[in-house]
Amino acid sequence: MCNLVQKYNIPGPRYTSYPTVPYWDINTFSGKEWERTLIKSFKESNATEGISLYIHLPFCESLCTFCGCHKRITKRHEVETPYIQAVLKEWQLYCNMLPEKPIVKELHLGGGTPTFFTPENLQALINGIFRKAERAAEYEFSFEGHPNNTTKAHLQALYNVGFRRVSYGVQDYNSTVQKAINRVQSFENVKNVTEWAREIGYTSVGHDIIFGLPHQTLQHVEETILKTKELLPDRLAFYSYAHVPWLKGNGQRGYKDEDLPTATQKRDQYEKGKNLLAKVGYKEIGMDHFALENDSLYQSMVTNNLHRNFMGYTPSKTQVMIGLGVSSISDSWYSFAQNVKSLEEYNHLVFNNIIPIYRGHILTQEDVVIRKHILNLMCRLETSWSNKNEEFAQLSETLDKLQEMKNDGLIEISSTKLTVLDKGRPFIRNICMAFDVLLHQKTPQTRLFSMTI
Ligand code: SF4
Image (cartoon, rainbow, N blue to C red; front, side, top):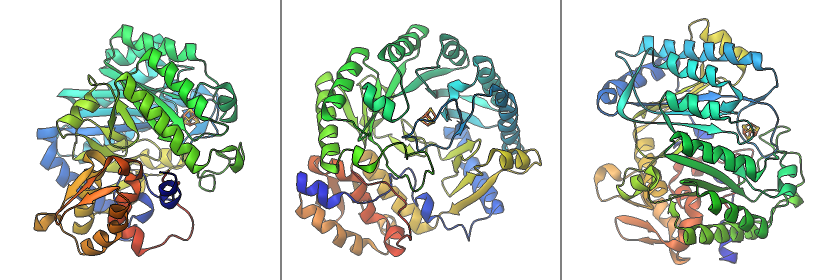
C-alpha cells in the first residue's frame, strides 16, 4: 500500500459536482440560462420528488485554522436578523420565479456555524421558508451543530420545525491537535449535545472526524475513535484534512507544513480508524463516510439510492437543489450556479430583486454522461457503459488511463463495466479523475485541489 500511496497521492477534486467548480464554463453561462434550466428541471421533478434546499449561515465566533468553509468571523450577533431577512428575500425571488409552490424534501443548514444564530431566529428562518413552500410527505431536515454552542433550546426549536438529523464537528479529541487548529472543545460538550439530541427525539446524530491534522498521530486518531465509540453516533464523516493554504488566505497558516502527517501516515490513520469503526459495526459508505445499519445513509446505499451533491452524500436524489445565502451553490441538474461570496454584495443584490448568483455552468450532453459515471463510482463503486447513451467521446482514452490502476489491483474492468476493488477504495478520487476529461484538457496554472490521500 505504501508505494501506491506515494504513486497516487496527487492533487485531485472531491467530486461533489461534475464538472468541478474550477472547470465551469463561465463564459457560456448567464442568469437567464440558469433561470430557464432551473424552471425546466423544477417542472419535471417538483411534483414527483420535490426539491432540496441548502441554507448557508456563514457566521462563526472564532476561526478554526483548519477550516475550508466560507465564513465570516464575528461576535456581533446583531448580524443575525438582517441576514435571515436577506435569505428569506432570496427565497422569495426564487418562489416568484418558479411556476408552482416548491415541495421541500431535503433541507440542510450549513455554515459557518448555524448554531451561532439564536433558536428563535433559526425557527423564524424555517417558518419563513415554509410560508412559501410545502413539506414533502417524507422529508429529511438536518443541520450542523457546534458542540460548544449548541443548546438544548437550539435542538428543541429545530426539532419542533421538523429537524431529525444533526451533525457535530468533532475533528479530534487531543488537546495539542485542538490547540493547533484553534478548536478547543471537550468530550463532555460533544457527549452533552449528542445525548440531548437523542433525548429530544433526533433519529440520526452524526460526528465529523478529521485525520491528517497538524500534530495528529495514529494514537490520537485511535483515541478519538474509541471515545466516539462511547457515544455511538449513527453516522460518521471520517475524512482527510484538505490542506490548501494558498486558496484559504490566513485560514490555514496557523501551523507549518512539517507539522502535518505525511501521506503514508495519513493513510495509516485512515486504515486504523476504518478498522476500529468496522469492529463497532459501522459500514463504509462511498468515500469517507460510515453509518450504522439503522441510519438512512446506510439504507440508501443498500437500496441503491445513495446520491452525492454539494452537501456531500445524501440518502435520496432530488433533481433540483437550491442553495440560499452567501457563496451557496445550486444545482438544477442541467446547470450549476453559485451565489456571490461577499455579504455586502449579497444584500445589495437580493434587496434589488436580483438573484445573487455570480458564476455557473450549463452542462453539456457530455458533462451529463460523465457526471453519471462519477456519481456511480462515488456512490456505488462501479459504473458501466453497455448502452450508447453511457458512452462519451474520450471513453477509450479513459480506459487507457485506467489500465495502470487495473495492473495495480485497484479496479476490475470488463469490456463494459468497471468495479472498484477493496484495494482501490482509498483511491476513488484518482479513479474518478480518469473520467474527468476537463481536468485532462486544461491543466490549471495554480494548484486548485487538495491531495487525494
Ligand atoms: S470549522 Fe466551522 S466553526 Fe470553525 S471556522 Fe470553519 S465554519 Fe466556523
